Length: 283
Image (cartoon, rainbow, N blue to C red; front, side, top):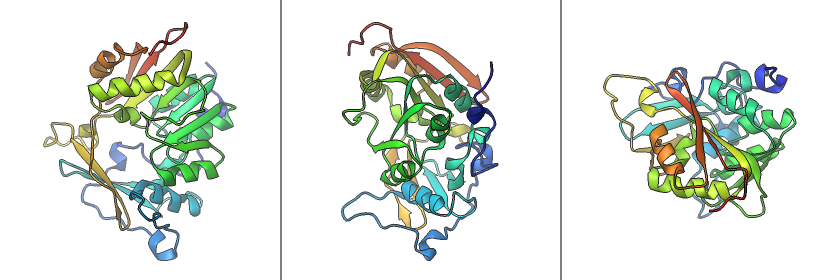
């Protein structure tokens, strides 16, 4: 199969950056600083707004041309692991993506909804390849960057998508965004909400890498239950974390319009494909 050039060989900024959650992205105990607070790039949140450390990190990185080594995101897990990542990774081109993310994007068709789009890592490459892409993300800062990069992106929670988006032929939850489904009860409601935004016959592609495999030490036998994000002097709240297993996703999908089409494994990661029937969707 011939691959679209934009999705097979191009690497925009962030060359060599590790995949989120990959072993080259984990630096336990290593402290990172960020130049953005000193050079005035960091934007304080609006009064009353929730802290947005991820959004601030990618905004700082975008402002300097997505240059590596400038802005960092810290993930603090409830089991004590501290993971530091260069924000330039979230601007990397397809050659630096996880192979399963490339697999999903190459097979994406029609109108595409990029759930958890961040600053547009996948959406920008898809748009360059000629696709009609809309992104949603809970981070206002990340959405601001995606919009600045030419993406039609909206700030929204996955279970409460904005109205007026129309219907999509492909729904993507890449870069470990299957975690947005949450535990089984919530996964059913999220999948139902995504089905309501999808056209008959639509496909959903979602990738997951269990956090316990990020650095694979023997003392991390279980998935952490919560995570919080830090950037410079901004700390987000602790949030529950549940990465559904393929079995849990299959079970949750059985009570929604989606059905499981297949699961592809690559190392410790898996890519789940769900599909809708080609007739009218009943929610």
